[in-house]
Length: 304
Image 1 (cartoon, rainbow, N blue to C red):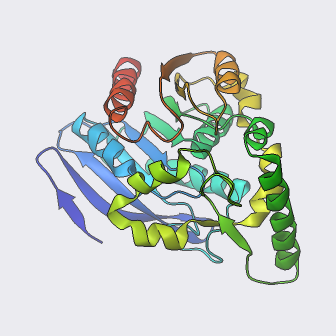
Image 2 (cartoon, rainbow, N blue to C red):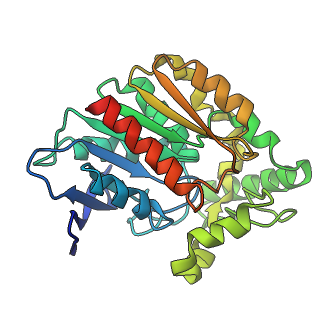
């Protein structure tokens, strides 16, 4: 375990248990006397916290918030075997475990827990908020809201090949074999889960500090292709009671704009912000400062 100290916050390596598996996390604490609200964060489809979530967490900590940033089991620095198996129910369990852990931490305001998710995890936090009405606020950045819409964004030929790969993986899993994996992000025309024209170059910018590791771990068990169409967290958006910031990229073809706006309109206390960028650009300049600045403004207004 290590701790990093700056002039405004500390960052500690920590873990929490999720159904018997240790999930790795960073815990940021601002250098302030009072118990701050705490933001729980995780990344999107097949991604890990090292893909620029630290940039957000640093800004939040500098603004006076505690932050818990975690990797899902089987991904990144968390334990869990087999690796790179993306299970929606298991990731939901990891989210509940992370929020439960945040509510046990000393010297934070456990009555003000915020769920922050991006892309696939943006859908996860909407799902979580529909059932956990003790959350103080929710931030859903370019959220996945509709399984059918996400599937339609993939070329038919690629989608068909992914379904075949998913069947191979599912049958292999039933027979006790190792997962059959496919790339999470690829170039247009490749057999990968996300092949939007800007996906590959922008994701490479996200992982510039550790490109070799990304190239090794840019895979997911293909069985997820069999269930993508059924995962629509926007379906229960009307059950969310917490103030919710929904951030939509107007050039997004991974999470189509129309369905994102429709889901946001069903959240009773939603605030919607739009940005003239694509799905992967909010993490990077020149859009990052505007996106994270709106998040901090939302939190200050909502929790202040």
